[in-house]
Image (cartoon, rainbow, N blue to C red):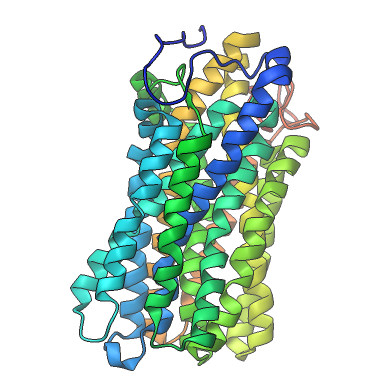
Length: 465
């Protein structure tokens, strides 16, 4: 299978018509510098996108009794933003090739002004719950930014650099969650709980800055095109759905807990809005900062191994949270919950590294080598990333709905955490059974013909990615 041919030169914008990051000379002389510049401004735009996506995780802290919304209603409110953000990731993935990575970054960043402006209008007591739901749903466009940004950066970097680059891109974007929570804390501490519009006034100009810098400094890659055949092939490939399942466990946990953390503290441990806001940013911040480390370790030791250890750790951290909930110990609860954030961040980096590695190894298993194998991996992984990201984000919806039901039924999140523990155990088993059983390669991909103990059957090349 040959690499996509450069398309004819396009007028307007900043288009690069020839791009071959796997060519080490091209990468050294030109590619790395251009890719790094695009990565920096992609991170900035995605960062603001994540902040707006999780805007309502902060705004609900401003919604006191005068708003007339109970805890279950608040969990459902933030769930709407999670749902729309997950669904938006699919079209956003294809928008990069249709409009250009730079062009779409500008448009998607500017679109964040709409939910921000509408939140300014409705954020006051007396607004109907339906109106709040619709405005919260619109913030989901910020969740779509992740898919387009990751798809774009995936095209800029060679396979050997993808783990670190995608980890930086995603981690820098994820930091938008704790940053807006920190800004919310400052607003509550200085302006008071009755001034949520101060938070919105901070972010409106930042959106304009992100869009302007993307317009000025980013590039479009002409060779990147939408491949409907690759999309159909990735949908039919079982690894797309297996990785979607695992990504529910890592990123779904990160974004779901990011939305829910403050509400859990308020309702399970009777924290005030200021007390909750002073803690909620810690977990998302650490989880975001460590995501590139997950990608780096995956580059070095293999994504499947890091992912397996991550799920084992998340199960253990959930046990700590359950014990703390049963004993009503806030300090121990915080240790376990922050541990979940850190481990989910590591897993986010390692699972995304696995995606291109799986398709590269699958190409080799089919007899492809060199550039043909690299082109196959780029083609399939680019198509799969958006779908995997969308399904994974739906895990955040599941977490918030589980918390809603748990608080409705028992007044605490205990039963929800029991369900999460079972899910992490399932993810551990799937990771081991599909990607590690019989693996022998220390650097991340098992050698062709690696065998399971006691078996003479050849293992596929993707075992141990």
